[in-house]
Image 1 (cartoon, rainbow, N blue to C red):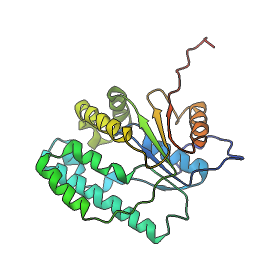
Image 2: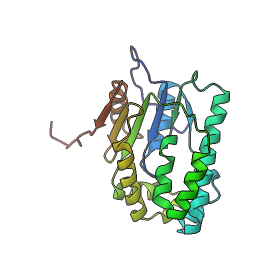
Image 3: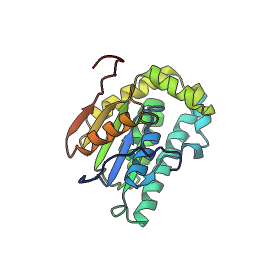
Image 4: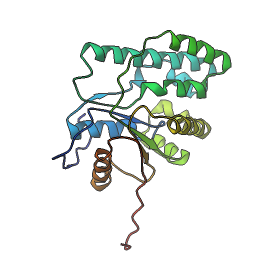
Length: 230
């Protein structure tokens, strides 16, 4: 977590959520935010390991026959991560994750054709997934043009082939998923104009709002600051 900036946040007299899941489409900044939250709260992290998926480069290169193995690899990987944590008693430590196992099917619905989706569902339904529910889910939203710009900026080679059309489909799938999500307190964040990496005010205001949430669905939509206007 040494690459995450640790802006100072006053945590006195605060009851912290013990398990936080940060979600959102590719490029929105969920892993960066998860690492910063973990550093602020002195929590462990539970992070996706996309670099370990050998099928992902072919999938991003639009090799459609690699969609199913890509999704199944991620499913097996995430289930294994959860099972490993159970061995360490996940209900005792405190953690920040950059994925929510419940949304795994979301990606499959976007990427798989009807036959592949049936096979994926057969595999998924035969697996025992007993993941703990987060105390708070933070869903980061941003339009496709913002995602494209951030993907270009971070410069991961495999991701440069991701199309705006795929990001649009992904955004729509996330919107549908979280429209019905009620399993944990949910904070939906308009992440397009927030810079929690370089702007300490952006970060501290977001964290302070997060810590005020105890139940239900909430929206964080900060207004852009116009120079010279108060």
